[in-house]
Length: 427
Image (cartoon, rainbow, N blue to C red; front, side, top):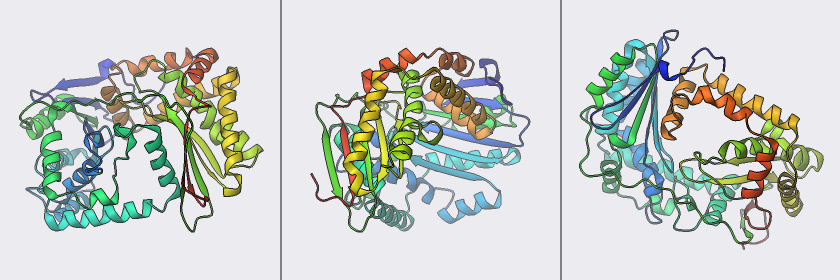
């Protein structure tokens, strides 16, 4: 794969600090900046129905004040030095990233360490944040796309499964979260032995690791880390349809799908290419060509496979005229049946292969893209030679393999369907 930043095991330095923190460094002397990206294996999977949104709220609150910096001081320091830093929680991981000029790398690391290790959860700023989050949630409750996806997840995954909920929570739970709960979440789940940090830029590996050791080497938490497990969800056994009326809307949004696979499943590459052909390539693949362009049944329609540490959903999303709801669903199901019934064409597969290999090459042209890619390599245990192997992995996928995984995962008789917008009644 041709790119300006070749990534091979020889060009990456990977080290594990005494406290368990994994550090990966990719030197790029052609760029005067340094990009830093980190992940902690924690997040909304530890929330419950009563604490939904806790990980999201607690993590966002880290930047609202630390031992060394107020919220205002932190923002001023970033602005005055042309640096950036942000942190947020998803369902499976907490991610943070920053960028600075090489001469400000020490300052950026100091901010990272201060936020990760020494948040103070100041009452005034944290309550301001709570109000902002509640405003976002109330707005989301009126967004047909958000509501359809939220209710799809609730139908697709059992109530006991982490994926049953969204990580941003619900207004009624976020209202009740105490400052102590936020601090307790931080104290329990922010741990170096479940974290990895990637640094890419004009910095020597040995120097970067030494600097990180000084700032984060004393980060330690008592006790053992809690298990970080996303169980597989059972296959759906019937069509679960839920309609959520939202007043004042002219468009209905649809999400239709079923549980699929994790990122490390051997079927991932074939299903990913199949999904690309089915609902993403060009103007949304076959779905776009048939359901939207040819039949005129959707304003937009696309598919996605959410393959993460756990087996996420494979779903189709669409925005439609309410009068076309049933016909649009029929059109989507017909395309699923077509994907299951015959191999994709060689032309479709060739285009999909070129797209994914070309997209990765483009991603690797920036420090940010390299850091994000190395973060994925580490998180999913892909190996430092992954990018060397990747083109051959993609080229080896056949139409018959795509057909096999489509028949294995795509369901036309058992699926979850959520519709939000101007519908007649909730079911």
